[in-house]
Amino acid sequence: MIRLNTVLTILKHDHNFREIINAGTYSYHCPVEEVFEQISYDSRKVDSKTLFFVKGAQFKPAFLETAIAAGVRFYIAEKDYEVGIPAIIVTDVKQAMSLIAMEFYGHPQDQLKLLAFTGTKGKTTAAYFAYSILQQSHQPAMLSTMHTTLDGQTFFKSALTTPESIDLFAMMAEAVSNGCSHLIMEVSSQAYLVKRVYGLTFDVGVFLNISPDHIGPIEHPSFEDYFYHKRLLMDNSRAVVLNSGMSHFQLVKDQVTDIPHDLYGPQSDNCILTSQAFHFEVGGRLAGHYDIQLIGQFNQENALAAGLACLRLGASLADIQAGIAATSVPGRMEVLTQTNGAKVFIDYAHNGDSVKKLVDVVLAHQTGQSILVLGATGNKGESRRKDFGQLLNHYPDLQVILTADDPNKEDPAMIAKEIQSYMEGPSQVIVDRERAIQTALSMTKTPQDAVIIAGKGADQYQIINDTKVPYAGDLAIAKRYLGD
Image (cartoon, rainbow, N blue to C red; front, side):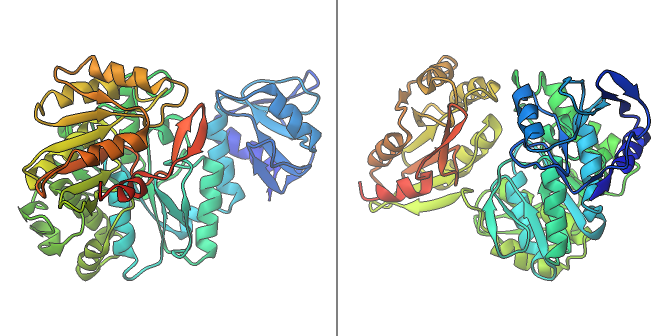
């Protein structure tokens, strides 16, 4: 629970409090001694003891009216909605929500070692590596784009890469009550843009890479804004692990000069010395031999980043070696074999840079005809369409089938045509994703051939008109047609 007076103290200390407005009367001090037993931003989950937060671009006054009908007596917002109950007015409601949630749930972050990964790609894979490493000698919890576990036993599908602050601190408190010692998180640029992790300090923050992504009307207005919000993790971490091979490395390195840090990659001692499909050798602090299930040097670099981070959090070299060897990730570089011997690669790669790395690693192993099944999301990440089109011009021998991938409120055929407008070579459009996958598998002939299915990974839904419509999943669908 939390007292109203405590709420006001938190807001004033953060220079976020403006006033309390009640029926046109303005106040700076606590009008009553109110105690809240619940906090919520969901009008369907409130009662008379709930402090309600008005937040989000999609908020409608009807939501507040629903909350009041259920008994809500106070709300926090950036303006007075004049609904007959006291409004606690703040400059930034998301900022307020994070700090108040932190207090409401008893500062669970202080009882956990916190590890955060950011980057345009690789966050989920690196998080799974870290989870597997820490699991060797500790009890970690994990919040990833793919799955969440708060006890190491039960996994459930994540709703957001980084949860809303109220949900985040509730999950942390549950992880603490379950005896967890560490929490591994993916921290998106959106998490800082909308202040889901405001006020939170991580024990280790890892910056994997950066390339243009999530740029559009409802996300970041520019690459500079995207990159800036990514870098905020560095300012909010006690120690940092940084990829020396990333774009704009010098800027981020200069930013972390006064923070304890480890570098990995080609411009550091912590680098990959030799790389084979399922094992690699490392120099520096993690010197030694490592077995790995995920092919591709970029996956080996993600493992190296996770290993360095976990070393700072109490993992031994033996833990790191065993954890990396045991790691598999749903929807990440899963490989099937057709009855004709051709390989099918299924991966979550969903932006230009990650698709390039996926295609390159497949072409290095498969020397025959390769077919790529690819789509782009609707109503977000619009810049990916141009990125995909221009990227595919570098692979003239690659056969391309463009299909639906979470089209949301846009026409997937039009998204495909936009990608094609940047392409110089031929491609075909098969909007139905299952038929696109079936067609791709039917085009292989020899064991040297490959089908690359990019984008959905392990997701078992398509986002259409803001609704998650059930979808069998790329892996299940590919398995249906292995004999075609």
